[in-house]
Length: 454
Image (cartoon, rainbow, N blue to C red; front, side, top):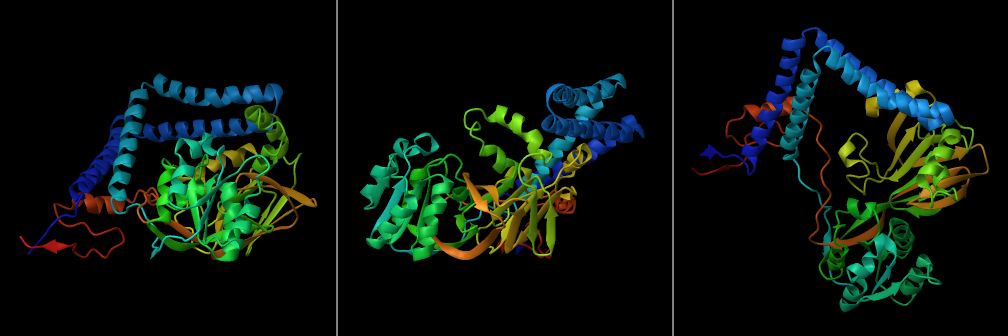
């Protein structure tokens, strides 16, 4: 008996080897050419980033001449860093070292990504519904309902379809009426705000819910592992579907499937001018909002954690991937029974620069909780709920409702892309050192992999 490499194992090994060689090469090159000056090179680069971040804060919180000067500084700082490298005749060294470091990161993550695959939530096979009722917004997503002939295709499968439009926008009321008439499945082709309204009705009556990603972003569909490029594929849930339960969030009595936002974003998007002039409205309102001269002063409580005067607060139905920049806006699961909380507090240019530390920045709080309470120094607070602008009385209580919604999805679907793996150099070295042997998955005890006859 001999060990054989798992499918894709050779590529995984060579990617790991490339990552290790590129990383070592970058370090050796820096030290051999620049010696101790390499420390100064890194310090100058970091200083440039810090100055740019601080200048960006000034640009967002100031107006007039100060804003203009801050924008100039934000752009000039990286140019000054490059000029310093060029004056020291080491610009080529920095470029090559950064390229090698980037190659090491890309190859390393490619090697580690082979340890995981797109995840699809387990579900139980279910028979087709007897009386499916679907609501469709023909304006969502630039007209996806018409472009993919969703109404015609759904009706061909036996579903009752109602198009939302003038005088017919009460999605929740239409869904309740359909259940009263005997509908045993509800679904929505539209944006996440409409999805949440009808999901609330489906959860209340215990009927399954189908998501058809016909909106602009469709984050809920993304985290369910659905095909957002072709929303018609979601209709397969009516004929060959599986069902499982997911959580819902509730903010001040209103259901959300994705998130509820408080603070700067919620204040700006509710301005009457925002729809027609987004950039101008942001530049006009952000200085007062970020410096607490306009809008509420928020306080947030989540278990033993308390936040005082954060500028931005995001409460999500299960946590988002905060440490994965490539996967921001994605959730690994929707059935964890908790809320995600992200709060940002920045009151100075120094704190703005500290945000470069990512999840380790003192002004950034990321945690999970079963309940989050957001209060303000006024009787009401503006909230963005799944993209819908609302005003709610304070304090606002956000809770998770575990397993509240029965979701029905196609048996065959893309799945949720795995999180971008952390660069684990010990794991990469183990992979690089293996020579044709089976590769145990990350986190295993090192036992041999599958074997076969020789």
